[in-house]
Image 1 (cartoon, helix red, strand yellow):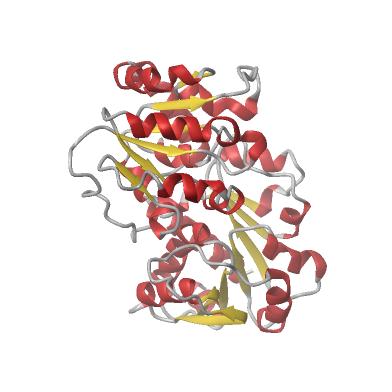
Image 2: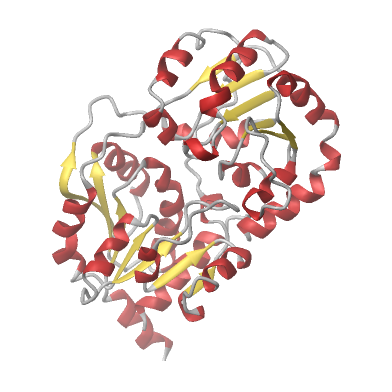
Length: 379
């Protein structure tokens, strides 16, 4: 019986959509690797939107049986993108509509963002089954987008996350907790030699959305404080979309990048591949889901709250229980110092928050996700 299922599965085709920001790549590519390993005869198409995506994926797919990288309609060639920097993307909806005839001949299509789910929402007769995998986790992740319900199958990292979707009406048989897929991403950039002198490393990562970010009110002032001190090494690597939406950010960081205790990265793939959350000793930010990734290994965290929110009873700010929350600029540097000596107070809470949000983080999440795709193929 298993032989007949295997034959049916390998006669089909799977598409992965790498059409969005480069930050989505580490949430998808480990599934590609696991699927190619589990079903080496399975044809797998990786549709890409730019030469940046193409260069990264071609390099990593050498030796993966059945996997080929394909250019989507509107493919854009990017000059100077060899470091994997997030490129200007082609318009995604025309690209998706042009892909529809190809995906109609594809058994399963895998994506990591909501925009691609316009296809099954607008074209429900399209025979390909969309499998949506998560890329953002934590108490502030957006879950109410109606496009999510258009996915045939949804993969989330944890049972906690699964329950949030069940409450929004997604059918139980259509959503599975796999573990945190990005934990299996192996193509991180080594960052061990960023600084000449060894000091505790602070990762400053304000969120990109103004209403939940500390950057509009405090960004420049916090940056100046971190530059003037020499107790800590500092990595400035904010969310890609903050770089896009706060034009003043580039000029501010350009003036400080020469300091030996400062590393500024506003473009490279290291911003999104987990390199900096792995290297940091202290997390300094507000509501970014990068905190969850950082807490896979519990370490000190400090949260910036320039508006003095009443967050304690707000489940959207549950992540702030993982460290000290400060409401005055004068407390930034003292709080960083305190975080090193008071971390024991937060370790248990951090472990609970990370485990509840991320589920399995040993790297098995990608294999579990690939197994789910095989199951959908066999339906």
